[in-house]
Image 1 (cartoon, helix red, strand yellow):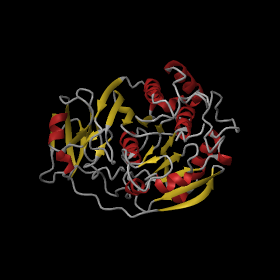
Image 2 (image 1 turned 30 degrees about the vertical axis):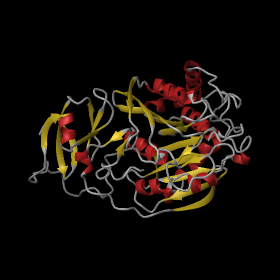
Image 3 (image 1 turned 135 degrees about the horizontal axis):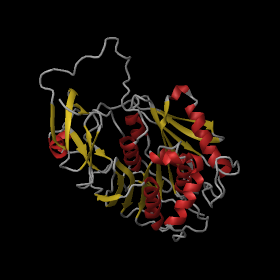
Image 4 (image 1 turned 90 degrees about the vertical axis):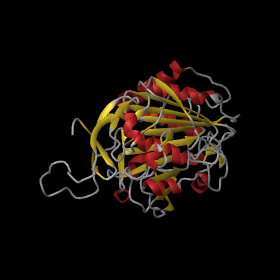
Amino acid sequence: MTHPLTRPRRRLATWLAAVVAVALVPPAVAAVAAVAQPAAGAWSSRTAGGMTTQLYVPTSEPALAAGRALMINLHGCVQTSANLKSGGNWAATADEHGMVVAVPAAPNGGVLLGCWDYYDTSHSRANPARHDDNLLQLVDDLLGDASLGIDPNQVYLSGLSSGGGETMVMGCLAPDVFAGIGINAGPTVGTTSGQIGSVATTKAQATTVCRNFASTGSPGFGTQVTSVVYGSSDTTVATGYNTLNAQVMAGIYGASTQSSFSLAGLPGTNTAGTGTLWSDAAGPRVSLIANTNVSHAWPAGGGPGGSYISTSSVNYPAYVTDFFFDNNRRVDRSAEPTDPPTDPPTDPPTEPGLFCGAATNAQHQAAGRATSYGIDPYNPFYAVGTLDYLGQGNTTTTTLRETSEGVFDLVTAC
């Protein structure tokens, strides 16, 4: 292969004016107080997983009390980790989420021209001849560094081209490790290095390969989420692989409800294109973005750009991070970054002006108590401040109690 197969979740109670996964938060929610500008972090280089890895560590606090998220980003062939470090547009998103970003270089220069070894059907956790074990060791090494404070339930992987293909391999191989995978123009699992110009496998075949990779780790599919993105002008990797990848993962997850969404309002400099969402009863599981007039490149959507990096695109680092943070089903969202109270629990707050009442999801949304995206009746709703899941559909009735200004809990009665 001769080409690279190659904004953030702010505090839950305050980041309600930006795009939530696949649509804009309603104007009523957008009036919530503005977010303070986080402090910038810094890049450094270290050896981890047997690879030279560029590591961005923010100085801002993690967006979730459970700890920092880790985003691993894989370059494509010809492209390098230095390209993504300097031009991938990760820093601002990492700062706002308090997220660590790791950009490793493929071991030993890659299999050819820097490519990741995503090929064929012989991947396993125990096979040291592939790149799979390097990436799993990278996760272990970074989780083992207590100074980073990474939450193992917030480990994500993304990549372009061969890095996108390897991202799908790892998502299938270790769904228990990777809570979310972001596949950018990556060939489907089970394909060879020469099968990039046209789709050379089927959904059934790829599904079998993915499930076989997972083996005993298969229960991890129950809570994993996937984002797929590609440029409509890609002439290197067949664009059909992207839809296939989304369909394979949606099928494995049991996400059978399909809807479309507009890219208008997403972060980035070019938001032309289409979006498709696959959901299950509890909410979104798979997102697919086709970005118009973008070629075979990492869609940075801003920054200085570089080798196989597009600045005229959606800001995919911001989008994919938001999608993962919003839809992660493993993270403990109930934890608070403060010491537990020493006094016994008290009755619900009686502070004047705090809301408690039943209404339809649409009415909660209009009043700024809930947020949603998607198309009725498949649009999932979440409580502002806590992101308690309120079910799907505008007419679903739920009861919310405001525990502090702008923070709502789902309750059974007032």
